[in-house]
Length: 153
Image (cartoon, rainbow, N blue to C red):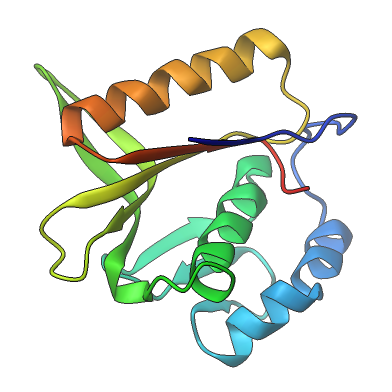
């Protein structure tokens, strides 16, 4: 299990200027250059070129944590985008939930890692809820690992 936290952030929705600044970061520039992600010209949406081709709103404060985690999985840990699913439905008993990121094995038939992303600056109780949520998804999917993050150190 990997747990990362970053404190002292507001958790507010991102402004257009904040979004432009974050997208200019090296990891995002690399993701855009290699077409792992596409950010529209207005900096309002991000497209993940992955197993399930997901499109999300960049104003969501959790989205940058999720996008950074997605890009780290590719560029720092060596996982292939086609083995990563973003915001995939997970059956939890009678309910259907949504996992932030799932990393599959090479054959795309077994979940290796459940990644649970939360916006920066959440409190300890909220973070513990995220830990419990990730473990619940991992148990349901028989995943090997969990990674819970509320910001990238």
